[in-house]
Length: 343
Image (cartoon, rainbow, N blue to C red; front, side, top):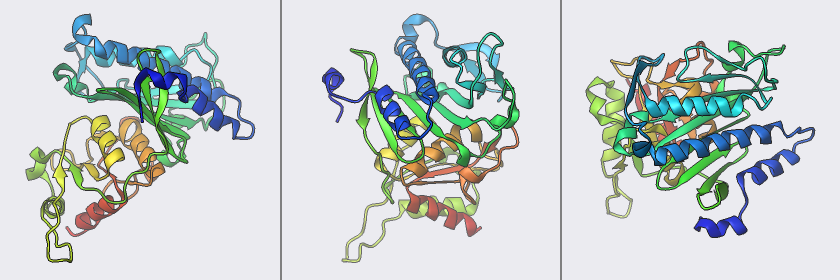
């Protein structure tokens, strides 16, 4: 359990944890540890600005729109710039891609390049910034597949199953960084007294079945019949087998993927952002949101689906491709797929 600054004298830091995992890999060079140091530094800078956004004058809109056609928040722009500047000079990356940039983000010529590819959503849930609701940063790491000094778009357009690591940072009542290299999932809480992330959630395992569902039911009139039946089924008490009735699922929806997924990962249940009549391809971005969260969820024993197949098997065709997402406890995701097949 996280116990504040006392943890700093006896806990395991994020840097030490990643280094120990790398030492167990034959031929590891330390590049991965260096890249994570830079990502963690960016998270600390973003966290500091998030905590003081109202005082720093960076709440509200920039007046610009991003490639998605969405209005850009000032803090979105700040977070995007911080992440790029934090990692571009380290020599660990060959190319980057961000939800906020239309094309790939190249490594400047004055800096060395490396073997990794970084993709990220710099500030997920940014529409919640001005009302002080939890927001976060999501990141995904692949190995490059092209040759040459610089990476290309092809390096970014890899299936989620080929990720070597993924994670997110949630800026909430505490700031927590959760990451996985595929074998397990661990969470680290930022101790503001010393400015370090310390291990606070070791080997996170999502329950096989939960009791919470998370979906924007304001869109229900746009949903297919099978999806509506699935929601009704979760709202309906079921017999326990002893003459009593069980408790129906509880509804919880924040509207920030990082916040909704973090709760789902720790407590179980299911988060859904389905396709509907308005968004037939889905709304969430495959590369920057769905794939990294799916990688984490599967590593914790859960599942992630488009409603018809595994998220990690989807072959990307564009940097800003969108997909439906059903993610969480394996049995709950399987139930969603079953109802959707009954159209």
